[in-house]
Picture (spheres, rainbow, N blue to C red):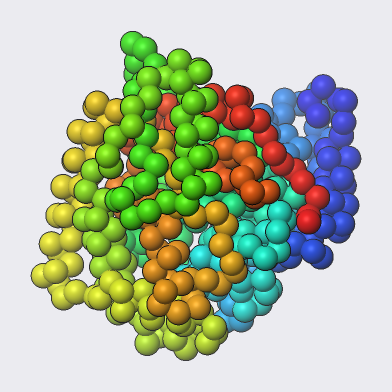
Length: 453
């Protein structure tokens, strides 16, 4: 676009045509911003023609999960209560992408209030389908962005991850996703004037979904860095100190020894072989540090906070979203104040043990989800389905609790469905994660965009 080979208007129009073609089947788009995107593209074309300098993402359309604010557009969170909750300004990551020349083209679907389950189904917009197989969930909670990127509706999606919500859609839809370190990207997760409580400050992070790791890296460089609207952001360099050689990779195919599907194990093995071919020393280890402690503390911390507002949440959530949270609270029972304070110290101890682990193994390779893509709504179908999904995402859950970065990357097709793996690194070492994920992608290949099946 900067060279004048294609105009921003042509780029936007081609994606709007693709949305019109495939979204009726996929149902990933909730609010289309066609006219607005056309105006922004026309302005970019005017600036290019005038010889003005353009940003590194000039003309790139992107989708935005419907819990991240786009100024002048309703941030519905997928529920009727917030149908008219129009944002006054862009959320920090949206503002950064637009400043780089990217163009928001649509809001995307998510589970009700992002807490209604792993499957992307909302009260306002219905069910998003996996473009590979409608009998499988696209994952969630950023499943709208995962499905949109995989099916060619946009080259970039902006979602968030508090336990796999970027990585699982990336794995299930055959694309790539970055969950950054806590404090790497600025965000604003307020609903109304009040800031979120502690667990919701420490765990959820915004991040990108794209079709290639190279694209993730370009967006990472745009999104990182301090912002006055988010005092949590740490001004650390984009890349850490160089290592003397390729970092050692700890391979954990079955976190916690709870069982893993043969396709998932094969995907991890394929990714490990790709890393070895690239020169990485790969070592199979028994497990990551204190997995069970992290899972228990994560569940209790979040469900304790949920329990305090549950009487209010029950009045605004549709009935179909209640079972997932109720089963989650039954599985991880809320604790009292003394117990909650103890959990905050447990978290610090787990983070310390992970930091020590990374001194020996700077990277971890493992599954995103320990099963192939599951049926839509399995997590809300009953205690057995809830337990399967909770167990399947266990490595995502633990790494979100610790706050470390991870990149989900496709390991190819198994049984006709995408299977993703994740590369996990020490805090603020997204650069190492991206390097390793790109080495995997270069050797295994890219499988999207696809036409919906």
